[in-house]
Image (tube, rainbow, N blue to C red; front, side, top):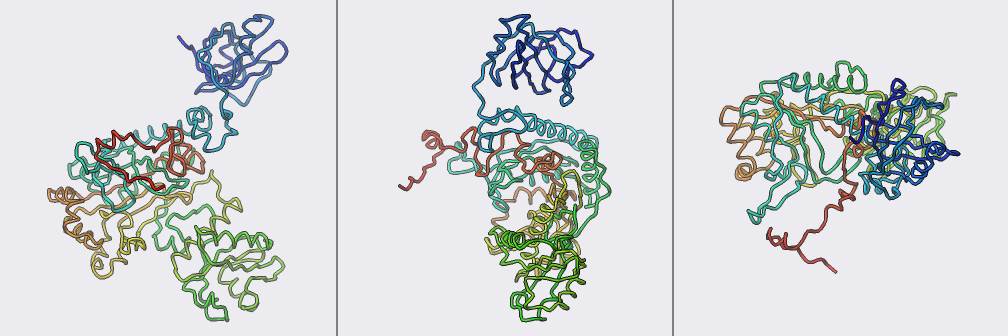
Length: 586
């Protein structure tokens, strides 16, 4: 056999045992007539000892081993004199009697340690080496443990796991599809699923009652830290349920995961309406680990002085930053530059410093009197020593979103976003529709199968922008971990939704006729939810990006630099698909 034990399991109770280990050389060091090697496998590290006095030839072989050589050894477990309390095997070492090199290794392009010297692109190119690092492997082991917990929990609640197809029809409503040409159907294309949405609804029509799937999904979107072109959802659907039924069961699942993975007790969660979240935090995924709630200052500033920026604004809001009245001019300029960045888009920043000595200094001293700024202090609930940061604009939601970015930046600067604290809530009562500047029409906020709030259905024709959705998002620490909705199961109501979204009857039939027809055969009331597995794992692992909890992720350009994908394909393949590429411009 290649090994009797792993490199992470031997303890002081195993002293005197003859063992065979196999793994990779983490590091080696020669001290006098002794050579010490740290041997690593998935389970841990064990120190090996080669003694020149006992076997000079064996010791000489050990001195030739390079980093990441794959080796097998046989030897005896011995108590270690200089114990290492940083590793579980730190009380023992192996006195090696036999050594076999299973595979040599080139010098790795970066150190295979937690604090590596490899940059992101280099580590992605050699991802198979990066995965040897304990920090990365731990994330994937956490992901594995979470999926086992999720499957067991949902199984205990009578959910059945069903695989839905990867090659489906394209539904352009939403994000961009990845499309796949069909050789047997020239000129026609499959799409990779953005989610199993319509398929899981069909499973409810089929009477499966409770479905789940750890589902691969694909969206051709611009990337960022919490997005990948392919990602994994914990996808679920239930029949004969209302909104509270869904929220209760998946809040229980989330509570179970937090308890098992992090030992954290999550209390009964608040349900916050979308409109309140936007008013208080400028976000539909508010971070509740710290305060700095928005204060609206229209009545204090607009029209009370000759300051055009405020007088022409439709929204003036601010945040009170505790204890930061001593911010320097340089620090305030940095914040002004931050909000002016293109991705935020504010035109400027106004500040008021309420000094600990009772003094008041601001960037608008020449326009507003001390008494007026004292009134603002009272409105904002500021105290001596606090800093008030203010943004204004001609679009309420846009300005609130800008102020949200500033709030999060201040939370980061002040160390208030502790990754070991978890503040979760549900956001409910979303708008059913949102305006798309790109499409110049109303779009479904979630998807076109979301149930309108029954109280608002009379407004569908005249005031669709005021209709609320029976939708809900699970939010933790400013991250949307999951979301779902009650679904429309009535064919007539679904047709009205398509009309509001600008679908002709012909287009609705072409894209969703299969679903509409299924609803004619006794569709049950149903609802669902999907958690982003990658985001959930990264949150519980304390990561800043989802890439390290995915085995083989793409970079920020959507490329797999290890496989060099996407790439050009052979002209023979293109000919079989009857695809003719446009010649490249010179």
